[in-house]
Length: 186
Image 1 (cartoon, rainbow, N blue to C red):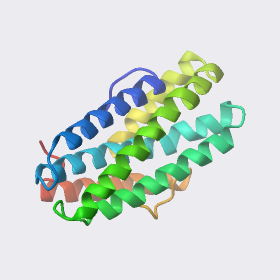
Image 2 (image 1 turned 90 degrees about the horizontal axis):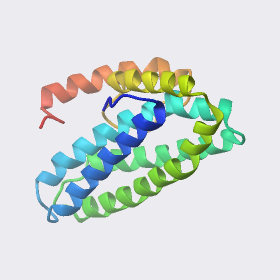
Image 3 (image 1 turned 180 degrees about the vertical axis):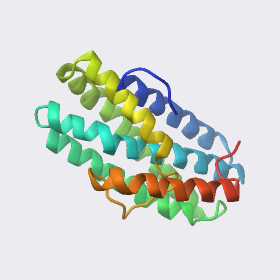
Image 4 (image 1 turned 180 degrees about the horizontal axis):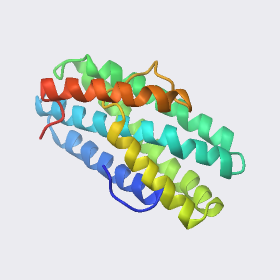
């Protein structure tokens, strides 16, 4: 989290981190208690990343990219499904067969989402914005990830302005819960 550069470089670096978490998950045997720890870590990264995209990437896509409203709506819908899956996964024990079903679904869905962003959305945004605009968006995304929630909140608003107002408050509560429980600490 917080890699530097323009929005595309920042979010692409996040994508590689998520893929590393998925590789770690796939390498662990079914039922291994470490799977919960890795799942919590990838959840933290995915939620922060998604919130930052909803706050700054998708509004920029709507503003600058031809057909941006439809693209942004599709991406936000995929985020909502991912958040519902993460929320369900949060309450499933690692030795429950549903844990592996949900993690497999999450990996497939998120991997496809990342691929679509990198192959379609990012090139369209790069073509539509200046380097300065892209860098400024990268700075906003980095700041957003620092205050974003770390747990899934499927019923929270996912578009501005409500997400920019409520997200940091949920993020603060999540970080306090994480601190108290030790969640997300390596």
